[in-house]
Figure 1 (cartoon, helix red, strand yellow):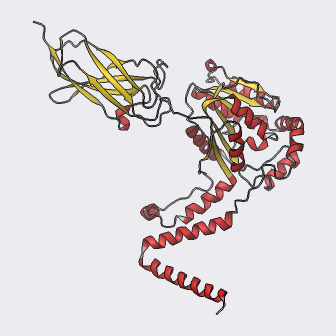
Figure 2: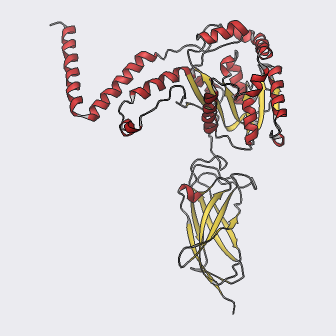
Figure 3: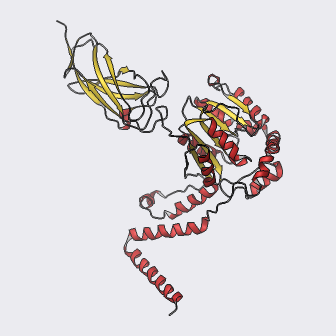
Length: 450
């Protein structure tokens, strides 16, 4: 028997064995489905390494940057001004997608009020305006003067625009950003990077103006975008540039310019699926997972949420990650005894055991972090005062940081036995106990004055 015949017989034997086991074991059947899905997807997706500039000579594009800037200006001159002023609400076809996309970007960028956010390729600045309303200082950058003019008009026309954060509209030449090194906290690029001809130079500029610990977040089309019919039509009508987005190439460029880590968020609204309620349990165990996995992987070929990190990015209490603390009060006696109507004192050691920077200096703002004390009756644990006292921290406290503070306790007018429960609180965000951080209790005896 030939070698090929032996291989065929072996393959049939393996296949028959797999079928036999599949009929007798749910787990084995799910494993076979998973392997089959992976093989199917590998053949179907063909993650070929297309270049960013699929139809252009990169050197020629760098020389033509100024011409392409003119084309971008012409695009906005010829576009429907009322449509641009009304985005995203006037974008009836893709309204839901826009809100979904922004939710993903804002979440993973950990955008918080007070951040300085650069929007690259801002166009009519509608996204910048949303961030302005949220409390961010926005810097809207574009090569089109007309686009930025529409953006200013949008800001001027809304009575709720937050002018106290001093929004900026910056026209740039497509080569160098007129901003200081390390001057922005976050950079957001929404459906714009694939229009950039000199993408390497611009990425270097973005890395330069991003502060250490900052994040770049992009939502861009995928690796087959340039050849899509809609893209080719845009090129024919407006002369704009349509590039592929190949995340592996972008990651390599990012490392070259100090962006240490690049990740992908594998989400898309276009290929999301519905699961019948009656089949939810089966779905959670992996049944028919292929019907979800295939469209998700297909979508990743055509859409990318890209995050690029400059150094270590640490969340803070404005948009926290894990809020946990170890609180160790050190009362001089147990119970702590004080006379009625007089203040008491207690030393408290506090360790940040989470992953979030506690902000102590942003007074009266969301995320302002202090030690909180709630007062309970000792005999039945009744909560007497849920906001009895706050104590300031000496400064910001990072993960693994430890501080000791002397807390002056308010006077209590009624003698009796009490329990003080210590917890950390990020104002307008959360008491740490509400997200499963441990608290600490101290017994308090208030003695009558003889």
